[in-house]
Length: 199
Image (tube, rainbow, N blue to C red; front, side, top):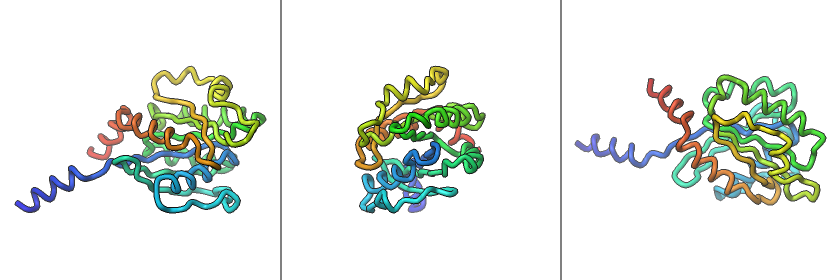
């Protein structure tokens, strides 16, 4: 009898876990964003921006937001490393795509890397949060301007939004993550991934 109640308690108290990819070309601020997330959602102080080095491979961050566990996979964005991104697509519930909004000369590279991600069959229906990062810099374009440039009208089948954030001062990050959690909870992709785990 105890094991029955314990099992029920464990089921009711267990938290949903989502895997989120943090993608973007190099120097967009992905690792800085992950460090700022850690400091905003936990008692851990993230690395200061001047101590963050380019990611070669993968950084992992685990956080709790509301009653949800989030596992962030921050993948290196250098051209030679982008080929490993697809190894993580199949298990990802959503994508945070980070763009350096203060560097318009690199928007074309960001756009083509993002389009490649979205065309991949293992990313079908994955919610997409596009972050116009580095809003603390005076020359950063707004989320609306970035949306016009990236021109993602073909994304009717997936939930997506653009948000203006700063991984330096933390502005916009909590609101962005809350949107992502809400969307993942009701995403068809989440249902599909749950089904594949149970199968």
